[in-house]
Length: 400
Image 1 (cartoon, rainbow, N blue to C red):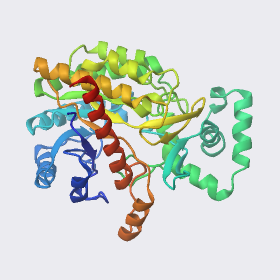
Image 2 (tube, rainbow, N blue to C red):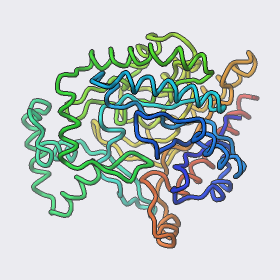
Image 3 (spheres, one colour):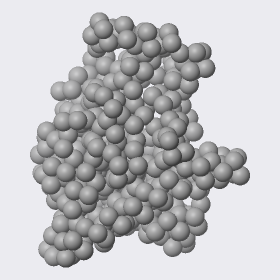
Protein backbone atom coordinates (compact mmCIF):
# COMPACT_ATOMS: atom_id res chain seq x y z
CA UNK A 1 0.00 0.00 0.00
CA UNK A 2 1.05 3.57 -0.61
CA UNK A 3 2.29 5.23 2.55
CA UNK A 4 -0.47 7.45 3.96
CA UNK A 5 0.90 10.66 5.43
CA UNK A 6 -0.43 13.80 7.10
CA UNK A 7 1.02 17.29 7.00
CA UNK A 8 1.64 18.55 10.54
CA UNK A 9 3.01 21.99 11.30
CA UNK A 10 4.77 21.05 14.52
CA UNK A 11 4.07 21.78 18.19
CA UNK A 12 2.00 24.89 17.42
CA UNK A 13 -0.33 23.08 15.01
CA UNK A 14 -3.90 23.28 16.36
CA UNK A 15 -4.28 19.60 15.46
CA UNK A 16 -2.54 17.25 17.89
CA UNK A 17 -0.69 14.12 16.79
CA UNK A 18 -3.04 12.11 19.03
CA UNK A 19 -5.89 13.27 16.78
CA UNK A 20 -3.96 12.51 13.60
CA UNK A 21 -3.58 8.96 14.93
CA UNK A 22 -7.30 8.42 14.33
CA UNK A 23 -7.20 9.41 10.65
CA UNK A 24 -5.50 6.31 9.25
CA UNK A 25 -2.21 8.10 8.49
CA UNK A 26 1.01 6.34 9.48
CA UNK A 27 3.56 8.94 8.41
CA UNK A 28 4.00 12.60 9.26
CA UNK A 29 5.12 15.23 6.79
CA UNK A 30 6.56 18.31 8.47
CA UNK A 31 9.17 21.06 8.45
CA UNK A 32 11.15 23.10 10.94
CA UNK A 33 9.14 26.26 10.43
CA UNK A 34 10.89 27.98 13.33
CA UNK A 35 14.18 28.10 11.42
CA UNK A 36 14.50 31.16 9.14
CA UNK A 37 14.59 30.45 5.41
CA UNK A 38 18.19 30.05 4.28
CA UNK A 39 19.53 28.90 7.64
CA UNK A 40 20.71 25.39 8.55
CA UNK A 41 18.48 22.62 9.82
CA UNK A 42 20.81 21.07 12.41
CA UNK A 43 20.88 17.40 13.34
CA UNK A 44 19.82 18.34 16.86
CA UNK A 45 16.74 20.25 15.66
CA UNK A 46 15.78 17.50 13.21
CA UNK A 47 16.14 14.78 15.83
CA UNK A 48 14.10 16.72 18.38
CA UNK A 49 11.18 16.89 15.95
CA UNK A 50 11.69 13.28 14.90
CA UNK A 51 11.55 12.05 18.50
CA UNK A 52 8.29 13.93 19.06
CA UNK A 53 6.75 12.31 15.99
CA UNK A 54 7.99 8.82 16.77
CA UNK A 55 6.80 9.06 20.38
CA UNK A 56 3.29 9.57 19.00
CA UNK A 57 3.58 6.38 16.92
CA UNK A 58 4.41 7.84 13.53
CA UNK A 59 7.37 7.95 11.17
CA UNK A 60 8.64 11.27 9.86
CA UNK A 61 8.81 10.46 6.17
CA UNK A 62 9.06 13.70 4.18
CA UNK A 63 10.49 17.15 4.87
CA UNK A 64 7.90 19.55 3.49
CA UNK A 65 9.22 21.98 2.79
CA UNK A 66 12.90 22.71 2.99
CA UNK A 67 12.41 26.21 1.55
CA UNK A 68 14.58 27.64 -1.20
CA UNK A 69 15.34 31.27 -0.39
CA UNK A 70 14.60 34.15 -2.71
CA UNK A 71 18.35 34.85 -2.80
CA UNK A 72 18.88 31.42 -4.39
CA UNK A 73 16.04 31.88 -6.86
CA UNK A 74 17.44 35.26 -7.86
CA UNK A 75 21.10 34.25 -7.52
CA UNK A 76 21.60 37.58 -5.82
CA UNK A 77 24.17 38.63 -3.24
CA UNK A 78 24.44 36.05 -0.44
CA UNK A 79 22.96 33.14 -2.41
CA UNK A 80 26.09 30.99 -2.16
CA UNK A 81 25.88 30.94 1.64
CA UNK A 82 22.25 29.85 1.39
CA UNK A 83 23.19 27.09 -1.06
CA UNK A 84 25.89 25.81 1.29
CA UNK A 85 23.37 25.91 4.14
CA UNK A 86 20.90 23.99 2.00
CA UNK A 87 23.52 21.32 1.34
CA UNK A 88 24.16 20.96 5.06
CA UNK A 89 20.45 20.72 5.78
CA UNK A 90 20.03 17.96 3.18
CA UNK A 91 23.01 16.08 4.62
CA UNK A 92 21.60 16.39 8.13
CA UNK A 93 18.18 15.15 7.02
CA UNK A 94 19.82 12.14 5.40
CA UNK A 95 21.81 11.38 8.56
CA UNK A 96 18.57 11.48 10.54
CA UNK A 97 16.78 9.09 8.19
CA UNK A 98 14.56 11.59 6.36
CA UNK A 99 14.86 10.44 2.76
CA UNK A 100 12.55 12.82 0.85
CA UNK A 101 12.58 16.62 0.54
CA UNK A 102 9.72 18.56 -1.03
CA UNK A 103 10.57 22.08 -2.21
CA UNK A 104 9.35 24.64 -4.73
CA UNK A 105 10.89 27.30 -6.96
CA UNK A 106 7.97 29.75 -7.09
CA UNK A 107 9.07 33.38 -6.89
CA UNK A 108 7.68 35.22 -3.84
CA UNK A 109 4.30 33.45 -3.67
CA UNK A 110 4.08 29.88 -2.43
CA UNK A 111 0.45 29.55 -3.48
CA UNK A 112 -2.31 31.96 -4.46
CA UNK A 113 -6.04 32.11 -3.87
CA UNK A 114 -8.49 35.00 -4.00
CA UNK A 115 -11.01 33.64 -1.48
CA UNK A 116 -10.29 31.28 1.42
CA UNK A 117 -13.85 31.04 2.74
CA UNK A 118 -16.15 29.96 -0.07
CA UNK A 119 -19.34 28.40 1.38
CA UNK A 120 -20.60 25.31 -0.43
CA UNK A 121 -24.09 23.84 -0.55
CA UNK A 122 -23.13 20.93 1.73
CA UNK A 123 -22.14 23.32 4.53
CA UNK A 124 -18.40 22.97 4.01
CA UNK A 125 -16.00 25.80 3.18
CA UNK A 126 -13.40 25.75 0.41
CA UNK A 127 -10.97 28.05 -1.41
CA UNK A 128 -11.00 29.46 -4.91
CA UNK A 129 -8.95 31.40 -7.43
CA UNK A 130 -10.75 33.99 -9.55
CA UNK A 131 -8.61 35.66 -12.19
CA UNK A 132 -10.61 38.90 -12.29
CA UNK A 133 -10.25 39.27 -8.51
CA UNK A 134 -6.51 38.65 -8.70
CA UNK A 135 -6.21 41.23 -11.49
CA UNK A 136 -8.19 43.70 -9.36
CA UNK A 137 -5.69 43.22 -6.54
CA UNK A 138 -2.79 43.71 -8.94
CA UNK A 139 -4.13 46.82 -10.67
CA UNK A 140 -6.12 48.55 -7.93
CA UNK A 141 -4.55 47.53 -4.59
CA UNK A 142 -0.95 46.62 -5.34
CA UNK A 143 -0.77 49.08 -8.25
CA UNK A 144 2.23 47.22 -9.62
CA UNK A 145 4.38 49.20 -11.99
CA UNK A 146 3.64 48.34 -15.64
CA UNK A 147 0.94 45.86 -14.60
CA UNK A 148 -1.23 47.00 -17.51
CA UNK A 149 1.10 45.18 -19.90
CA UNK A 150 -0.03 41.81 -18.51
CA UNK A 151 -3.73 42.31 -19.24
CA UNK A 152 -5.86 42.94 -22.27
CA UNK A 153 -7.77 46.20 -22.31
CA UNK A 154 -11.03 44.37 -21.65
CA UNK A 155 -9.39 42.32 -18.90
CA UNK A 156 -8.15 45.44 -17.12
CA UNK A 157 -11.55 47.09 -17.45
CA UNK A 158 -13.26 44.01 -16.00
CA UNK A 159 -10.83 44.00 -13.07
CA UNK A 160 -11.51 47.64 -12.29
CA UNK A 161 -15.25 47.13 -12.56
CA UNK A 162 -14.98 44.15 -10.21
CA UNK A 163 -12.91 46.18 -7.74
CA UNK A 164 -15.39 49.06 -7.74
CA UNK A 165 -18.17 46.59 -6.88
CA UNK A 166 -16.45 45.55 -3.65
CA UNK A 167 -17.18 47.02 -0.25
CA UNK A 168 -14.20 48.26 1.76
CA UNK A 169 -14.24 45.16 3.96
CA UNK A 170 -14.19 42.96 0.85
CA UNK A 171 -11.22 44.88 -0.56
CA UNK A 172 -9.34 44.43 2.70
CA UNK A 173 -10.21 40.74 2.76
CA UNK A 174 -8.92 40.26 -0.80
CA UNK A 175 -5.65 41.93 0.16
CA UNK A 176 -5.23 39.79 3.30
CA UNK A 177 -5.95 36.63 1.35
CA UNK A 178 -3.31 37.23 -1.30
CA UNK A 179 -0.70 38.43 1.19
CA UNK A 180 -1.21 35.45 3.51
CA UNK A 181 1.96 33.89 4.84
CA UNK A 182 3.22 30.42 3.99
CA UNK A 183 1.65 27.29 5.55
CA UNK A 184 3.08 26.88 9.03
CA UNK A 185 3.76 30.60 9.35
CA UNK A 186 1.64 33.21 11.07
CA UNK A 187 3.41 35.99 9.21
CA UNK A 188 1.96 37.77 6.20
CA UNK A 189 3.49 40.29 3.80
CA UNK A 190 2.76 43.95 4.20
CA UNK A 191 1.86 45.65 0.93
CA UNK A 192 5.21 47.46 0.93
CA UNK A 193 7.15 44.24 1.58
CA UNK A 194 5.23 42.54 -1.20
CA UNK A 195 6.01 45.29 -3.71
CA UNK A 196 9.69 45.10 -2.81
CA UNK A 197 9.77 41.29 -3.12
CA UNK A 198 8.15 41.42 -6.55
CA UNK A 199 10.34 44.26 -7.83
CA UNK A 200 13.43 42.16 -7.13
CA UNK A 201 12.34 40.03 -10.11
CA UNK A 202 11.98 42.94 -12.52
CA UNK A 203 14.93 41.73 -14.60
CA UNK A 204 14.35 37.99 -14.19
CA UNK A 205 12.50 36.23 -16.99
CA UNK A 206 11.60 32.57 -17.43
CA UNK A 207 14.90 31.73 -19.11
CA UNK A 208 16.97 33.20 -16.30
CA UNK A 209 14.84 31.61 -13.58
CA UNK A 210 15.28 28.25 -15.33
CA UNK A 211 19.04 28.83 -15.40
CA UNK A 212 18.95 29.60 -11.68
CA UNK A 213 17.00 26.41 -10.95
CA UNK A 214 19.41 24.41 -13.08
CA UNK A 215 22.34 25.89 -11.16
CA UNK A 216 20.64 25.10 -7.85
CA UNK A 217 20.06 21.49 -8.89
CA UNK A 218 23.62 21.17 -10.09
CA UNK A 219 24.78 22.15 -6.62
CA UNK A 220 22.26 20.23 -4.54
CA UNK A 221 21.50 17.00 -6.42
CA UNK A 222 24.98 15.46 -5.93
CA UNK A 223 24.70 16.12 -2.19
CA UNK A 224 21.20 14.64 -2.11
CA UNK A 225 22.42 11.54 -3.95
CA UNK A 226 25.32 11.08 -1.57
CA UNK A 227 22.94 11.49 1.37
CA UNK A 228 20.24 9.16 0.06
CA UNK A 229 17.70 11.98 -0.06
CA UNK A 230 15.26 12.26 -2.98
CA UNK A 231 14.44 15.83 -4.03
CA UNK A 232 10.84 16.43 -5.15
CA UNK A 233 9.97 19.77 -6.74
CA UNK A 234 6.41 21.00 -6.26
CA UNK A 235 4.52 22.45 -9.25
CA UNK A 236 3.47 26.10 -9.37
CA UNK A 237 0.17 26.84 -7.69
CA UNK A 238 -1.63 27.97 -9.77
CA UNK A 239 0.38 26.87 -12.81
CA UNK A 240 0.63 30.15 -14.75
CA UNK A 241 2.45 33.50 -14.35
CA UNK A 242 1.17 35.97 -11.76
CA UNK A 243 2.07 39.61 -11.10
CA UNK A 244 4.66 39.57 -13.86
CA UNK A 245 6.61 36.86 -12.02
CA UNK A 246 7.97 33.98 -14.10
CA UNK A 247 6.68 30.48 -13.43
CA UNK A 248 8.69 27.50 -14.66
CA UNK A 249 7.11 24.41 -13.04
CA UNK A 250 3.65 24.56 -14.59
CA UNK A 251 3.45 22.08 -17.48
CA UNK A 252 4.54 18.64 -18.59
CA UNK A 253 7.31 20.19 -20.65
CA UNK A 254 8.52 22.20 -17.65
CA UNK A 255 8.78 19.02 -15.61
CA UNK A 256 10.55 17.17 -18.40
CA UNK A 257 13.10 19.95 -18.66
CA UNK A 258 13.75 19.92 -14.90
CA UNK A 259 14.24 16.16 -14.75
CA UNK A 260 16.56 16.26 -17.76
CA UNK A 261 18.73 18.93 -16.18
CA UNK A 262 19.92 16.37 -13.61
CA UNK A 263 19.02 12.94 -14.92
CA UNK A 264 19.09 10.92 -11.72
CA UNK A 265 16.48 9.29 -9.53
CA UNK A 266 17.31 11.79 -6.78
CA UNK A 267 16.02 14.70 -8.88
CA UNK A 268 12.29 14.10 -8.88
CA UNK A 269 8.80 15.48 -8.57
CA UNK A 270 6.08 16.10 -6.03
CA UNK A 271 3.00 15.19 -8.05
CA UNK A 272 0.40 17.74 -6.91
CA UNK A 273 -2.77 16.76 -8.72
CA UNK A 274 -4.60 19.93 -7.76
CA UNK A 275 -1.87 22.35 -8.74
CA UNK A 276 -1.35 20.77 -12.15
CA UNK A 277 -5.05 20.13 -12.62
CA UNK A 278 -5.97 23.80 -12.30
CA UNK A 279 -4.66 24.21 -15.85
CA UNK A 280 -6.99 22.75 -18.48
CA UNK A 281 -4.19 21.70 -20.86
CA UNK A 282 -2.49 19.60 -18.17
CA UNK A 283 -3.52 15.94 -18.28
CA UNK A 284 -2.55 14.86 -14.76
CA UNK A 285 -2.88 11.13 -15.46
CA UNK A 286 -0.61 11.45 -18.49
CA UNK A 287 1.91 13.49 -16.49
CA UNK A 288 1.91 10.85 -13.75
CA UNK A 289 2.48 8.07 -16.32
CA UNK A 290 5.23 9.97 -18.10
CA UNK A 291 7.26 10.63 -14.95
CA UNK A 292 6.15 7.73 -12.74
CA UNK A 293 9.70 6.56 -11.99
CA UNK A 294 10.60 10.01 -10.62
CA UNK A 295 7.55 10.58 -8.42
CA UNK A 296 8.85 10.84 -4.86
CA UNK A 297 5.90 12.45 -3.09
CA UNK A 298 2.25 12.75 -4.03
CA UNK A 299 -0.30 15.42 -3.09
CA UNK A 300 -3.79 14.24 -3.97
CA UNK A 301 -6.48 16.92 -4.14
CA UNK A 302 -8.95 18.04 -6.76
CA UNK A 303 -10.18 21.23 -8.37
CA UNK A 304 -13.19 22.22 -10.41
CA UNK A 305 -12.38 24.62 -13.21
CA UNK A 306 -15.17 27.18 -13.66
CA UNK A 307 -13.58 29.30 -16.42
CA UNK A 308 -10.18 29.83 -17.98
CA UNK A 309 -7.83 30.25 -15.01
CA UNK A 310 -10.68 30.16 -12.50
CA UNK A 311 -11.20 27.23 -10.14
CA UNK A 312 -12.30 26.15 -6.69
CA UNK A 313 -11.07 23.25 -4.60
CA UNK A 314 -13.62 20.46 -4.82
CA UNK A 315 -14.03 17.35 -2.74
CA UNK A 316 -11.25 14.93 -3.65
CA UNK A 317 -13.28 12.61 -5.87
CA UNK A 318 -15.54 15.21 -7.49
CA UNK A 319 -13.39 17.60 -9.55
CA UNK A 320 -11.81 17.75 -13.00
CA UNK A 321 -8.79 15.60 -12.09
CA UNK A 322 -9.20 11.85 -12.62
CA UNK A 323 -8.01 10.78 -9.16
CA UNK A 324 -8.89 7.15 -9.92
CA UNK A 325 -6.68 7.23 -13.02
CA UNK A 326 -3.83 8.81 -11.06
CA UNK A 327 -4.20 6.13 -8.38
CA UNK A 328 -3.88 3.39 -10.98
CA UNK A 329 -0.57 4.88 -12.13
CA UNK A 330 0.71 5.10 -8.55
CA UNK A 331 -0.26 1.52 -7.68
CA UNK A 332 1.45 0.17 -10.81
CA UNK A 333 4.58 2.19 -10.14
CA UNK A 334 4.78 1.07 -6.52
CA UNK A 335 4.53 -2.56 -7.60
CA UNK A 336 7.27 -2.01 -10.18
CA UNK A 337 9.57 -0.48 -7.56
CA UNK A 338 8.89 -3.20 -5.03
CA UNK A 339 9.58 -5.98 -7.56
CA UNK A 340 12.86 -4.37 -8.60
CA UNK A 341 13.90 -3.40 -5.10
CA UNK A 342 13.73 0.24 -6.12
CA UNK A 343 14.42 3.14 -3.86
CA UNK A 344 11.58 4.99 -2.19
CA UNK A 345 9.03 2.26 -2.84
CA UNK A 346 6.93 3.62 0.04
CA UNK A 347 5.68 6.36 -2.33
CA UNK A 348 4.25 8.62 0.38
CA UNK A 349 0.97 10.35 -0.43
CA UNK A 350 -1.10 12.77 1.58
CA UNK A 351 -4.55 14.32 1.28
CA UNK A 352 -3.61 17.77 0.08
CA UNK A 353 -6.03 20.27 1.51
CA UNK A 354 -9.51 19.47 2.70
CA UNK A 355 -12.75 21.32 3.08
CA UNK A 356 -13.42 23.08 6.36
CA UNK A 357 -16.35 21.08 7.70
CA UNK A 358 -18.97 22.24 10.23
CA UNK A 359 -17.34 19.97 12.84
CA UNK A 360 -14.02 21.73 12.18
CA UNK A 361 -15.68 25.05 13.01
CA UNK A 362 -16.77 23.65 16.36
CA UNK A 363 -13.23 22.50 17.12
CA UNK A 364 -11.85 25.93 16.20
CA UNK A 365 -14.25 27.64 18.58
CA UNK A 366 -13.42 25.24 21.40
CA UNK A 367 -9.69 25.80 20.96
CA UNK A 368 -9.77 29.47 20.13
CA UNK A 369 -7.43 28.85 17.24
CA UNK A 370 -8.07 28.51 13.51
CA UNK A 371 -6.39 26.02 11.22
CA UNK A 372 -4.45 27.18 8.16
CA UNK A 373 -6.77 27.22 5.11
CA UNK A 374 -7.00 23.74 3.62
CA UNK A 375 -5.54 22.01 6.66
CA UNK A 376 -8.59 21.10 8.73
CA UNK A 377 -8.87 17.86 10.71
CA UNK A 378 -12.28 16.52 9.65
CA UNK A 379 -12.02 17.67 6.03
CA UNK A 380 -8.65 16.01 5.53
CA UNK A 381 -9.71 12.88 7.40
CA UNK A 382 -12.64 12.53 4.99
CA UNK A 383 -10.26 12.99 2.07
CA UNK A 384 -7.79 10.42 3.39
CA UNK A 385 -10.59 7.91 3.92
CA UNK A 386 -11.69 8.40 0.31
CA UNK A 387 -8.14 7.99 -0.99
CA UNK A 388 -7.58 4.83 1.06
CA UNK A 389 -10.84 3.43 -0.27
CA UNK A 390 -10.09 4.18 -3.89
CA UNK A 391 -6.62 2.62 -3.56
CA UNK A 392 -8.12 -0.60 -2.19
CA UNK A 393 -10.65 -0.64 -5.04
CA UNK A 394 -7.95 -0.06 -7.66
CA UNK A 395 -5.77 -2.81 -6.20
CA UNK A 396 -8.61 -5.30 -6.19
CA UNK A 397 -9.60 -4.44 -9.74
CA UNK A 398 -5.98 -4.86 -10.85
CA UNK A 399 -5.48 -8.02 -8.74
CA UNK A 400 -2.56 -6.34 -6.95
